[in-house]
Image (cartoon, rainbow, N blue to C red; front, top):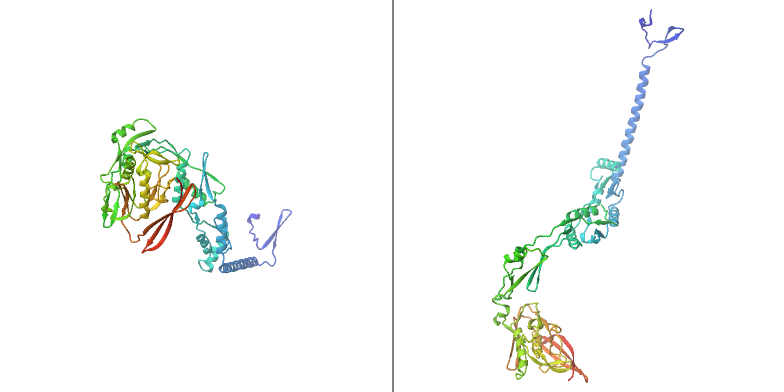
Length: 519
């Protein structure tokens, strides 16, 4: 019988092979449930170990969660702008992050374009990182749920970390303004077409191409640098683009320049004086001006003309200036015809002048240069201590008369000089001299309403009257002048303006301290 034909119970017998013989030995005391019992015992031990591990793990988690729930600081694993703020209080975290940002922000944003260097002060941009909100957000992580939820959040944060980016705010409008200003100052910036008035001509200039700052790109570049704190100790290359100048638009220039004259007028209810205004226009037609631009030139000259109003401010009658504010007069000799002519010419230039509130009167500007073509005559003047004939001699009497009228009207003296010698028509420190091109007499209308100067030279009397509208706080004005001393060669004097109300002195004002040569 072959082995194949044998049925062998391997669980019941052992097999031994000897000298090509197979011998079967029955297994003594064999128990089929023994191995199963061992397996079950091992499984039980493993299960107990797993359970113990889970219990320990849960216990550890509950301890972790409990401790986390008691934590009054920011939990571990939290960063703000890359700065670790784990286990810090709110105030400590704010201070740490703020110090880091301050240390890494430059005082100025340095910029360069070829050889041109400039900068934008950081203080001008009102840069602000919202650190408070970022720290509050960091503090709230792991504290918004129950103990278990907070524990899981804290565990997750500890493993994976969280980085909070504070919100950045800055004055973008101011940044754009600064960049546009830099753009206009680039050495190779675009030169725009433009125009200006030179005397009675309009000068139109043709522009040329150049570089301008790419404002949008630079704004984004700078904001990104501030956000990432990468601008300190750096100089940024200015991003530029080539720009062509605007074409000359003569229609636009004409519309901006053309002005209709405005007639002067006044109203009584409420009281107001509206001064006249001169207009302006091309002295050639608009088509002629356009034809000039067809020629290739760097600049073009277009003649202008002034358009005068029908009613000037000086034409408004005294009814628009109802109150006499002050008057002053001096005497002159009618026998000196040339001198009288000079007085009348100067007075005629001033007569009717209206000054609006805040406007300054200049004697030389109003009267103009004293020339033969203007009609002035030779008359006695002082030159180097001697009396000689000079063109326009005598007109300082008009200046001095006006000066005193101005003082009594309590107007502000801007510029005044005394003569070399005390003149015959006023006392010391009550005069005012003028020399065209060097010495002027100026005063300012510091009243609430316009004033009008009325001047006459007739019958040996030079007289000034100043009209306007009196107010409730008018002063009674007194002028006090006197000689304070003298030497063999000089006379010294002073003048004061005394302001009174209801007969009581309110203020005393020193007008001048003067020195005159003695004859």
